[in-house]
Length: 271
Image (tube, rainbow, N blue to C red):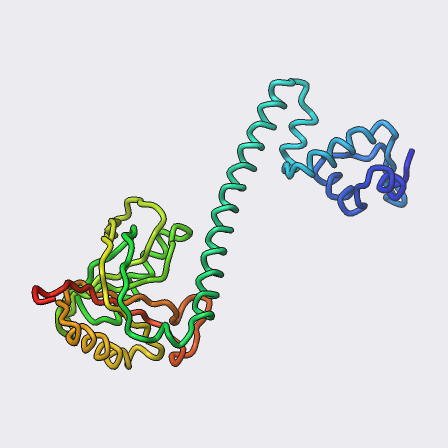
């Protein structure tokens, strides 16, 4: 018979793992010295040990390996393996989704880091339609954070862009503002209190504001001046897109917050 060290070298199973398999009744030593407690393994256990190594490399749990090795029913073994295959494939799909979310997060942060001074000038652009999850709210603008939190909790890995606020008022309101906390999402699902819909494409005048939210009014003044100088007609809802702010990962410095202001516009009859 082999000592535990010898059996470990023959089978490629660590002594620690052999001890665990013994405790779990998966691989029981052929003999245990009653005085020293040393374990000894018969040569006939090598095949079972190698089968355990193979199945563990397939990430099968110990209890399932025990059932497979103790079974004499080939159909039962095949069913167990197919079930494990389905579990692995489900994990792969989940990990692929996580990888895509990481890719989006990294690309977004790199895009922000690569912004040049020209990005902070007033510009005109067309936005594409996007699927959003939104919560319409009444109150102070700062309460939008509650809406964002609920959407993030509900949609998680389906989030596909930075949060934004839609302003339905045409004027500033102190405590009874009409606004909507929104987040772009990759697919729709039904969640109570959250409206998932397509936000239409639009032509807008835009400006990326760098700095604390308290200074947004300065950037709004620049955007509205541009709109008026061009003779455009502003419409609602206006949008604030929070490109970089106090998030879950990067708390950041308010001086470095980035907020894109988008004012939907129509050409005036004169234009």
